Image 1 (cartoon, helix red, strand yellow):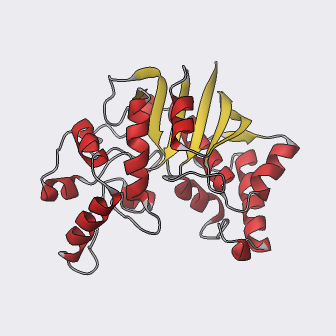
Image 2: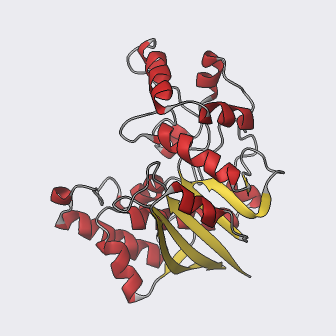
Amino acid sequence: MTQRVIGVDFSSRPSRRKPIVMASGLLQGAVLQFSGLQRFDSLEAFGAWLAQPGPWVGGFDLPFGLPRELLQQLAWPLDWAASIEHYAGLSRQQIRDTFAAFCNARPVGSKFAHRACDLPAGASPSMKWVNPPVAYMLHAGVPLLRAAGLRFPAHLPSQGDADRIALEAYPGMLARELIARRSYKSDETSKQTADRLIARKDMVEALEQGRSRLGLRLKLSAAQRDTLADDASGDSLDAVLCLLQAGWALRQPAWGLPPLVDPLEGWILTA
């Protein structure tokens, strides 16, 4: 059976210069045929696409939940849907001030609260508001996905549209598996070097050859290969890495989620 998969490199403030990038593909067995890329320069445009009928399974590069420890200390709701609704009602300034106060009251070395999945994935804590501002990505993205009526297996497995599955992905984890700690992207033109181009080409080659623990092989045309390697921002390649993680989940029981996943925090695919 051929099944449709998407991977999304998300931006909390998309624009023409820095759009949301979505990769799509068709999974058949262990081969993921890359279909192409779409770019959205506004949250409204991306939300309109999400609201269209499926079926598809998607890996989204943004956190879907906040740490339980943080929510408990702030006395915020401990039900996932209620916590997202509360969070969506805050301004960015309120989020920054609240999280900064939380961190300032904690000892050096443990300023941030973490979800159970953050450390095994090597991901930034979902409450981090700078470098990268994943707290703002959650704030902009998860309410948008919920408004589109998607299903969130890690949080509310029996609610939402079973033909549009939303899973949390993290491209950095797969990138490190493929090229270790080599840098492969930058939004700054002066840092878009030949070494980073070579790293992207090496990553694409590894994906085509299926050299990862995901057990999938990416199928590309020559033009598609060049498109992924030539995007020096790395956004196109990050979307494809999320695509591969979603394809892996499609082949796993229960989407590859741990049996005791915390529905408040959620889980990052393949962590």
